[in-house]
Image: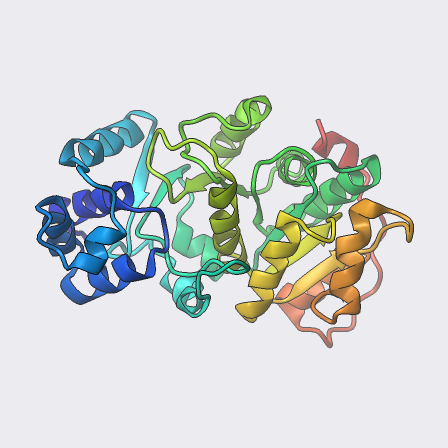
Length: 323
């Protein structure tokens, strides 16, 4: 399906008008459509509750500049009217009410760098690998191994491009010549974290994608990473947690995946490890299934929980995945 330039431009404007998942704005877009919603907000003729949640004096030039910037970077702005939109993956997001614990609602649109299609990624078995930024060698080793083993089996690996577990997961998938996707808590053109700019470039060049719901130029912020987590959970078949504290973004992603009805998996760590305490708690609470091999993960995402699989030996290329 091709959509008019007006609809795409309107959604780019709406992203500048409010932070993601504002329920009032989402309902208004659903009621009147993105083009009318954008024009009425720009003209301050939208209902009072919508204007109260919108930024004042948003200009159409911001939308035009964002679309031009994305195009200059070889990227694109994917919207719900596109065939590429992963509608099934996002169907459950409206049930996640935005409050202090969960962050719900489908995105207004997604800025994407990379040739791989979002609908194809969401339709195939895939895995999110998340965990601590301040990861241990143990955690990075196993994140890279799991990513390498799964990517070798053509399972796309999603993560958030942060230091620690995220970076190890992306690196492991790249070492296997697999597809990996980075979902950011800032715009795709910001270059954050600075130490992973090269990694993000490799992800795009290797057939993966860098994805964000924030228009070009949007800086990182804590709340944006929390909102990002729901996209990581929604776009993947299951979420694997490798090292996480009791209060962490990785545990937040796991809880969101569980609320969406997606399997949650966790790698156990040493019983005395603070960085694995969140994994152990997820397992104790019955939210996560303990896994120790790639076969354990494949049994969940491709064959079902009752699949009879043999334990897999360690993948020897994990060290390459951490480079």
